[in-house]
Image (tube, rainbow, N blue to C red; front, side):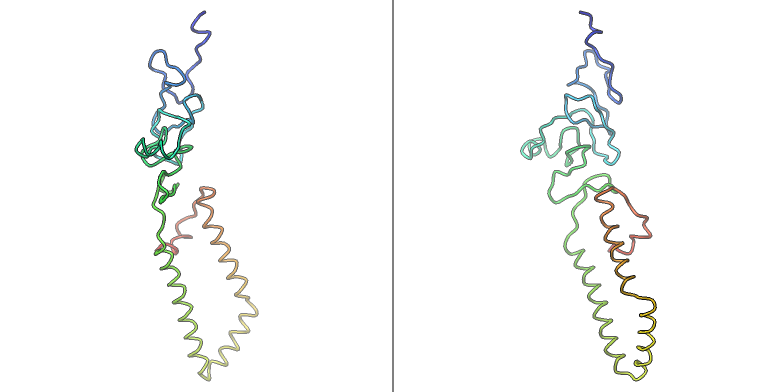
Length: 188
């Protein structure tokens, strides 16, 4: 019955400085997270700045989160779940760009974008109607038809729309961000 028969080496990224450290009392440094008090697997929080270190309980019910002030085990206030990448509030989502919870966009932001698109479409339609009445429009329209048939604007427009649909899902699904030059024009 020697203590070394039962003692294990301190897991990587854990703090075993206190004597008689058990699995439940392992010290976990800030910016690290573990799933429960019964695991030695300690993960670095590379996408979140809200891992508070020591802690780790498998109980993360809404009632317990409310009782703890809105912090999941091993997480700062307002964060919970694996690697503290879930938000306690239903009005927020986890943003890898902000490395924490961010407020969900309001419908007004999408309304502005839709309004701009509608305004551009109406302006184009009015311009088309006005130019259709002019005599020179017939020659211009004939040239435009030739260019459109040779270049094919519709397929290119569909490709551009599809590209930005894919780009819009890269961040939330895969945590990938495109360079600002590709996404700046969508910011309002």
